[in-house]
Image (cartoon, rainbow over all chains, first blue to last red; front, side, top):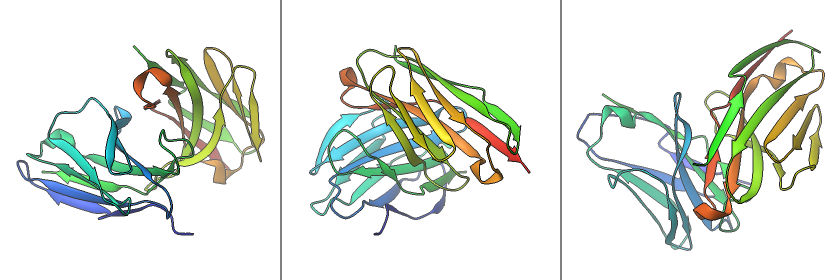
Amino acid sequence: KAGVTQTPRYLIKTRGQQVTLSCSPISGHRSVSWYQQTPGQGLQFLFEYFSETQRNKGNFPGRFSGRQFSNSRSEMNVSTLELGDSALYLCASSLAEGGHGYTFGSGTRLTVV
Amino acid sequence: EDQVTQSPEALRLQEGESSSLNCSYTVSGLRGLFWYRQDPGKGPEFLFTLYSAGEEKEKERLKATLTKKESFLHITAPKPEDSATYLCAVQTSNTGNQFYFGTGTSLTVIP
C-alpha cells in the first residue's frame, strides 16, 4: 500500500519567488492537511482540505494557499517567499475529515536564500 | 490559549534504562491526544491516540497514559532503535479539528 507522497523532497528558492508543493494522499483518503515544521516552532497547522473544500485554516499569512483536486491530490503554494519560510512542509492524509488516523508524508524541505 | 508543552526537550538513556516523556496540555474541548514518532528526514509516524482521562495504550516497549492535564509516554527497557523524536499533539473541538503539536522530545538510547 503506497504511503503519502510529497514532491519534491528538496527545494531551494530565492526570496521573492513563489513555490508549489505537491501531495498525493493514500488511495481512498479524502482529507489532506498541511503542516510547517521548524526547529523553534515545531509543527504548525496550515490548512485542511476535504473533498476539494478547505475545512480549516491555521494562522498563516495569505501568501500561503492550497487546493485539493477531485482525485484528492493537494498542492500548496507560497508566494513572495521570505527567509523565514524555510522549513519542512509536511502533508498528512486521513480517511475522514478531522485528521483521525493521520498518515504523514516525508515532507518537502524548502530552503529560501 | 491552547497550549501543548513537552518535557524534557532531550533525553539520553542507556539501553535498558526505562524512563517517561511528558506532554502537558492546556486546551478547551479536548477531542484526543496523539503520540507520534519522528525519525530524521521522515514524517511523523502515528503511535497512539488517547481520548479520555485514565485511558492507557501499549505497543511493544511503549505505553501511553492520559490524565486531565497531561500524558506520559513510558519507555520500558529501551533499545537503540527507539532513538527518535517523540511528538505529542492534541485535537480540540473548538478549533475545527485542528491539531496542536508540542515541540517534541529527542530521545537517544545508547548501546
